[in-house]
Image 1 (tube, one colour):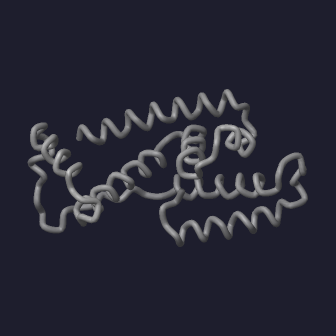
Image 2 (spheres, helix red, strand yellow; image 1 turned 30 degrees about the horizontal axis):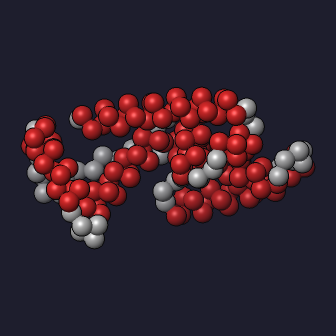
Image 3 (cartoon, helix red, strand yellow; image 1 turned 60 degrees about the horizontal axis):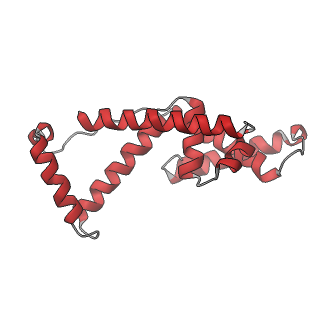
Length: 161
């Protein structure tokens, strides 16, 4: 969820400390692991929302003139699709796309970000998300649907820039 090992370790440690301090408040009406995971997810989301965005600059000062040309974009996409998976440039571009998606997910409002993160990064089923978040299954489905719509529009806007 955080995309950084050190941040994830800090969040995990904070989750265990918080759970230990709140152990008396655990009601026992659900699995202990779900309760602990819920604490960890909340802490990770809070840490992710506190991050500052970083704008990377081209170290060589080049302007990407081809970014606005739709034909060049299409040709670049074809060459990316034809490139072998071990090609360093295609690996780097896939990494950049993954970073863009994670940044867009981190920018979603709270209920949507949590459900999308648990579904796609945590690989939980909708039923498991409903149990962990304490929300009805219908609400989880609605949050996932609306979150994906917002995520899609954010990524389309980023691609158009």
